[in-house]
Image 1 (cartoon, one colour):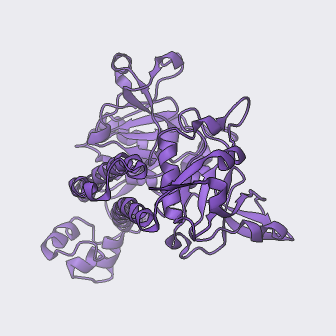
Image 2: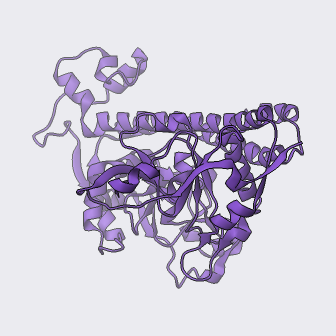
Image 3: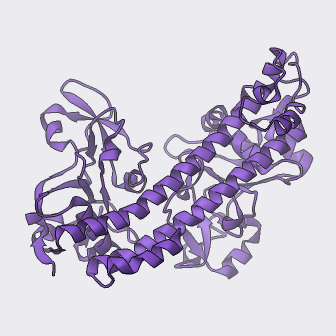
Length: 466
């Protein structure tokens, strides 16, 4: 039997966050400030989007986060993603942090009384009542920014607190699923880093050719150790020139523009549908996903991204904007450089307003080669510098067409594509397991918290999710 406690009685300390200033100054302390929009990434240890701000020294000490703190989003949110989201900060989230952590002013941190409740259990409990929309009455929006009525919630909401052993068991079981999801995400990051390293070595640093010029004869060494099978390394090494031309490129390679390639191989760079083609009334609750710039990161689709949808007949009416495997969808508004390579799972989706669809015949221009060329920092900067508009940069097709493009040998580009495809296949397997683990966790969460199922009953479900 669980005892009931008001949330406020379970907390030792709680404070709103702080936003601070964007530049250093007298009396200011540098801190990493976690926003509500960062919660999804921080949950799995990704702090890359967390900004550094400068907080007044006189209040900074009261706002420093500690392991075991829970962050609660108290302002912002949307109709489909109301306020009240949470994220738990475990000990490992503080490893290698160069500056203290705090949360933004639209959030609050909760620090529990350890003798009363395990912070991980409280986090999962709050996750449960958020997912079941039991917190929704405290999400208020009259005008402007939506707010979570934290004071009312903390003073009114009674939380069932079972014995300590059950708290720990529930928290560890659900946490183990998050840990497995995080492991798969890390594996995917490693696979992506491998693809990036190979591309840079072959097509930016011209490593294989330069090593041949230096007199290296071992094929594994010529390929930079990135291919360890000697026979395979020899096959690849034979494809690279043995000297540089007068332009500093491997002999036979040259620079042109993306438009030259598109014209030669009948490639297409096409904008998504405009407002006159796709109206607000065309969107619906479920159907064909429509890819918008907000759904994209610099290297694929945003985790837990919320897509807009249109009905199948609407997607058929806009058939020329359908995405196929091997297409690249490129965000052309706002934060230029976001993009994704379309795979089997996204084939048939719609390229939305604010995006470009880039499609080249795979036999003439492997999509993976083009994708990683677009990903190079020099190319991203070249494109950004030519986008139109300061407040909301906008990229048109003519700018992308004029982008410098490296003409390597077709054989080398094709071999790179084959390697990346094998890495993408592994990523796809990991992504499917991430989805299964997440769905299993979300199914078990409310049932474990409510006591509807016992811990012993979850083992079979967890084995099926592996």
